Image (cartoon, rainbow, N blue to C red; front, side):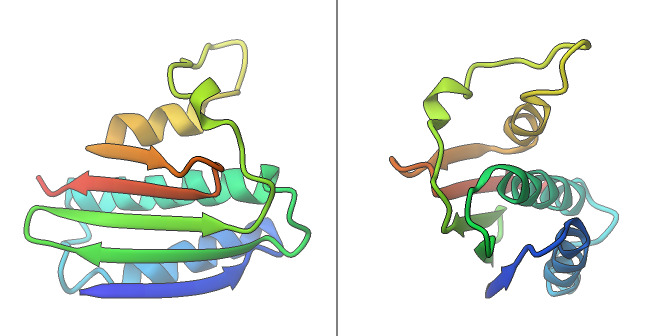
Length: 130
């Protein structure tokens, strides 16, 4: 089943509210106590937090599509900001001294697949059901 949501991340609290709303729609297909549900929540939170902090779009508009399949959950996130040079960050690892790169690092660890469009505005993520 596919779910599409568009919203504005006007404040940091909007991240939590929208993640919770998206996850509620998954509960009938993905058990809330499962690894997949946890990973989906973490990935959504981290990606939306990055958009909130770095997009450069004053309205911080976001489009999120969740699709469930037998083997996985697919997430597509698009924002309307400046995009980013994702290639420069894909191999970075976080350090204890610097908070940078932790979110993207976590997303990579919990995802089966992580891809960006060339402009760095659209993200494709696959989370395996386990």
